[in-house]
Length: 239
Image 1: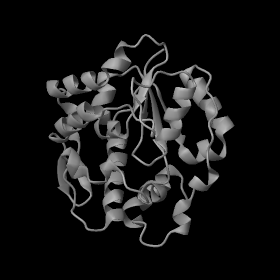
Image 2: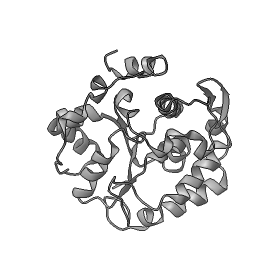
Image 3: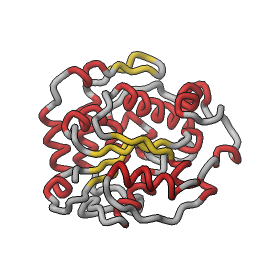
């Protein structure tokens, strides 16, 4: 069974998928935190900063990913990723994988390093995703340039948009399945059937909270639709 990883921005609900895999007997790393992240993350964070050196900010909310898509992978990046994933790559469990939202920041090179693994693209309405803080809110912590702002929701929206565009720019791997958080929460049985067919293993059901869907409807303030509107339409969310 190939390795499994979950690609999705922090606060997109990736912990639900990580907990599902873990309770289904998938080895998700020697140490996992309450969010289902494989920790410690330091080496992968360092890999993110190596990757970011080759991303060019072109002003506003635009970035040029051509260098990372065309160049040879930096050897320091390979070393950091392999160190972070050592326990997963060496484990003999036929079902193994990892989840760490920051993996999304290096998705193009992860796909090139591991072309045969199973990729779960995890998507959530970004209007819900920008309501709470996450380490990737400030892309500068990972060496990525972006337009400065004092508006925290705008900062989160810029981070979300950056990761969305990076995923779109990455050539699709052979084995990838897109899953919406909302579908998992509101129709878990059907979504698990799709995932089981994709992964080739039975999956356990976990407790989910329907109120986690559409939280943005109950909040006040700017939801940054000037940044997120196009992606909302592309992903099939009502605008």
